[in-house]
Length: 292
Image (cartoon, rainbow, N blue to C red; front, side):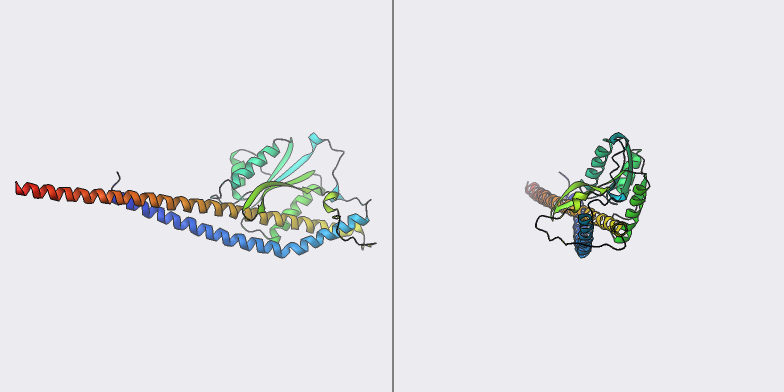
């Protein structure tokens, strides 16, 4: 059995670790609330963009645009597909990063012509160590989701798509299914699908509408803003999921630390009791010796 000094040292170490895990839990909780609040603040603007694009497509069924071009003339095996994989800059978030990179590897293995763009230091380090070519990095985005970074990312992807360097852009990220549950998801960013913008059965539809100077010019302006909003939403979802996973991991670590301290306390009390018993035995033995 370990002596009391060793047990006390271990208890102090576990206590210090528990303070750190508890602080990390509180920090992640604060960041999660802030990110969700920012997303809710921009939601009306994003929904307004969707509504306007829906009206344009509704009134111009013959309308054709580069952002909706599925390029059917390109065979499936020759299509160039780009993946944007969202990871975090830090660990200590359970299986958050591992799930993302594994899903990315599985999806990329299904196609011959792929390109990879990573968000977060973990993804960059992982694929670099695996000797997978990383075609682009969006650094400092994982820990600071904002419209500026979403615009930079959207512009890069739009340029690649418009100039034919890629035929499809997909985003792999972790989405918040509920306030306590996250799941890996894949979103098709480009080309856009007309079906995405169909009116709901009970949704109000406008009558005749004119778009100045032309539906194409209006769409040229709206689609980049829509993609920026979409990417910003993905960034916040991934950021929220990361901190949700970190909260769960830190909560489990804190619980484990409390269990360890309880076990060590029992061990310490046993060692202390054994020491007291030993001292009493020695005193009694000494007294008996003096009597003899």
